[in-house]
Amino acid sequence: MAAKLEYIWLDGYKPTQSLRSKTKIEKDFSGKLEDCPLWSFDGSSTEQAPGGSSDCILKPVFICPDPQRKEGYLVMCEVLSSDGTPHESNGRATIQDDDNDFWFGFEQEYFLWDPETNKPLGFPAGGYPGPQGPYYCSVGANNAFGREIVEEHLDVCLEAGLNVEGINAEVAAGQWEFQIFAKGAKEAGDQIWVARYLLERIGESYGVSINWHCKPLGTLDWNGSGMHANFSNTTLRTAGSEDTYKKILEAFRPVVAEHIAVYGADNDQRLTGKHETASIHDYSYGVSDRGASIRIPLYTVQKGWKGYLEDRRPNSAADPYKVAAVIIKTVKSAGV
Image: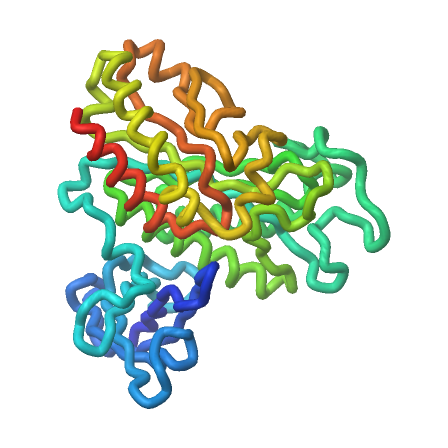
């Protein structure tokens, strides 16, 4: 029987890469990653190659069932240049976590967006709904908008085998969140991107687009969208030492600019020091402090400084591969 393999990759657009995909038909497919062949695409149409030498290569790195298609599979791919080396747009290839010692939990926020009104679901065509407050974890047609899309997305993700740990309505009308956890930075990034892909595709059937911008409502008094990165490695999970945690946290201080560079476009609009964010110009950390750059969870302290940290600066449009890569680099630089 013929199988439909949806090859998914990231284009080369800047400052924000977008998802691309195309279908490959394979007969008598085993369902295994190692049996997914390399495939090429026209990089001149995705800002990844010039027209005179346009072939780029798709290298399959993650596979799961596609619950929405008969005999379907979703295949996340890295992009290679024609010589077989990682393309400059390939953030996954920069992750130094070959032993999967690092665990990541990403909290992906987004807005369900009405293309006709160019506003989030739940916003009237003229003006604005009531101020934020009633929408967070809300129930009821007056405050929760687009639940049918969110529920379908959750079901499809779980059927695909993605490790979604929860969903909830967020603080603004039409804003939602899902959380994904994985042991291994590459795996976490793969699952976030596949979940984003599924959400985009489901939105198509409802005529609703997904707005990943971190501050789509501008400077108005509405929260932006983040992709908080919860992370740990063996050291953080077993340290039992406040001093060890502080050494790791202080390692982030001199490299703020390096982190912000990959934490998503237009983050200056979101990281203002308001709406549960720290200023983009500052670096801070604190126990249970959602206004800090990095939050030390109360759980971690209660367990005797054994647990994880939450970097609250990555925004909703950030590439989880690049976010994980820079976090791993900084944690390792602490030398503990």
